[in-house]
Length: 129
Image (cartoon, rainbow, N blue to C red):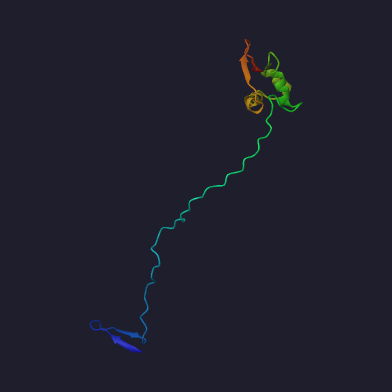
C-alpha cells in the first residue's frame, strides 16, 4: 500500500495499488420526475359488432290475449274510447300507471292515442284513425 500526500493540505490518502477511491454518492441514472402514471397509448380501431337479422315486428295492438294491455287496447278501439276511470277499474291500476302505459303504448304497440277532456272534466282516450 502506498501513501500519497498532497501538498498544501497536508492530508494523506491511502490507496491500494491500481485502485481508485470510492465515490461518496451514487450516480443518478435518470432525472427525477413526479410520481405520475405512465402515458396511455392510443387505442386502435375497435371491432364492430356483427349486424343482427331484424326480428319480426309487432303488429298494431299486438298485446298478448287476456293481458291488461290487451284489455286497454280493446277499450281504446271503441268508438267513444275509454275514460281514465274505466281503464283504472278494468285493470286495477292507479291513474299514474294508466297514464304511463298510454304514453308508451304508442311506441311499443305502434298506436296513435288521442286524449280529450269531456265537459264534466273527465279524460277520455281513444285510438286515432
